[in-house]
Length: 242
Length: 242
Figure 1 (tube, one colour):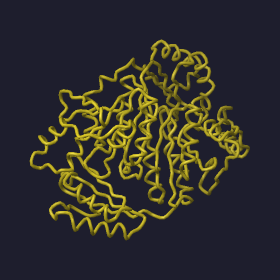
Figure 2 (cartoon, rainbow over the protein chains, first blue to last red):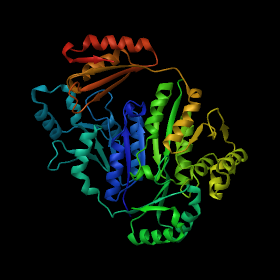
Figure 3 (cartoon, helix red, strand yellow):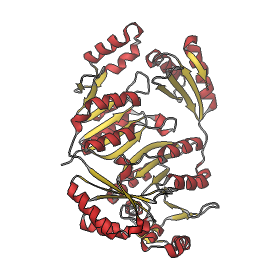
Figure 4 (cartoon, helix red, strand yellow):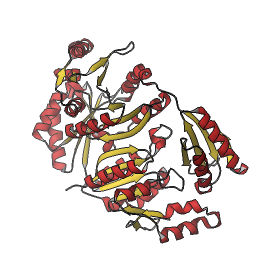
């Protein structure tokens, strides 16, 4: 079975429109490239019971859950507490993380910084070359900070562990409205029911009006569906294949 | 009670990283400005049972639900069907929408375009000056197309109906790590427990390291908390108040 994932963004700043979430688009692109199917993205506030309930649901329904946000030293950083509550375990200060944080801050350490050494009881630390601080994993929940630069660096170091069978993707750019294509698309899907077929209108694009995406884990499905589509499309409608 | 909202984005193209979701940041900013509290954002695939289950949950738990995506004429446009299933009603072709679509497309109409005239039974149409096509509302669920230009235009015309008591917001930009601030922030929250207090580290910002946001529907709470915070902050830490 191909692997599935959910992304859980924890942060009032996203919900209130103060900050645009750059982590979700990054994780979606990365996971797709790795062959992992993201099935759900959820953004919730910095509230322990809300985080706990969401982690229970997402963790049970997906192979991997990636959280971002809420792991700093201040009052609104409650992700670890929420994940611990989800699994019914305590929050512990991890001695290896504490040592890393003390070594990093040295005499600039403030006591609240040690909150970042806290993990749900039973969490693993993934240490890899190139990572100053390990990635904390609780069961199938990978806990990332919300700062995009840090999340990208940490994810980049561990990304290969998620690699699955790839998706094959072709794009067909088309002139004319979606309504003129709908019947052809349904016909292709009848012939290739397992095809992932997307149809996306572009507004104000002078070159083409609809982008079609043909996608599958099976390259023969994509190529066969591509031939079936091109056989049906009026020649004047085709702008380009990518 | 202040009004709450959820945003439901329906689209495989977002989950698979092909398209970045521009609608959520727009709606979050708009709703905050209107005084509406967005409590949850969910992104799900173009699948009727998934949409139906999510709409049931979000509609029951929030004053307003805003959906974006999945309302075109092709096979992957199943939002209306999902919302109808959520409320246990049929999908009907709405005669007024059908007339508008026929008048719009004229001899360029393809039969599948009339799929865009379908609504859940019992849906209302919100017609306003400046709107070529009405906004479709089913109970408390406002159904928007995924094309950002169209969503913005439609939301812009109906936005005032959502206006609630405003949020007051001040920002304090600070030098030094979050760990050096955490204790002061907790002290301010003890004095002003209803304050919405955010602490956001900035990476690689030469001017300041943390942005604090003080927010409330009560301006006196914000101003009092601001005074309490400034009285505690070391003078050297303060960069700017906005």
